[in-house]
Image (cartoon, rainbow, N blue to C red):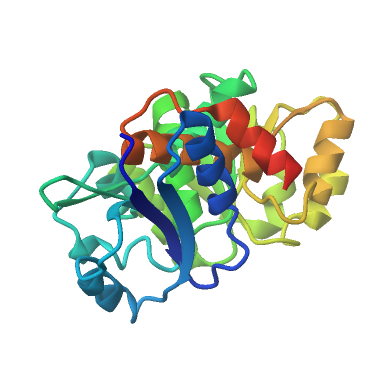
Length: 275
């Protein structure tokens, strides 16, 4: 694939996105000198127009798009098909344009989570805890459906969120028990804890990390380390962070958009570290 192609990340806000750093590093390593990767500020209301004008652009053909919030569900009606993985959580973070103009959506967050965990030696677990609810938590449940043999306890702030997580559990085939956020410290004793909450939400839990913790997957990457992740690492627990997820989901995006595999994980991670 030596011809010029375009790709980009869409979302709102988008200025903070590190996806261009990762994809451009991959293109350099793969020798795709004619490929570009940009970022565009696009919200839900502007997404249909963005797609409408894609084909009118006289520049290089589009290879694919990365999608962040709030577009992961809004994009689905604009696609020709979506993968089973994306359908399982009703969220698309990757769009690949076929040679025939078809638009296929996928979700690389879920396999990206699993790859990041495997890299840190986390395979099957007997039970797990999820801190928070929402889109990232549903992706966490989808990942856990493949590696957790027992119950997942989700710690949430409202009954509405609790009901939502139980529904996702039923849909994904995961045994989900819900508990009040006030009891979240009890969940830190699980073999695997996945924190999906915004910055600052889990800070108070840092004092409750057990003496011999299991694995923590904290999906945040800014600020890093979070107080919870720092306390976890100080007790020699295994910590997987948001940058690990970001790199691994981007690896899968690069492979799909370029048709080249394996994507250069080491070069992409080096670029992220050097940014």
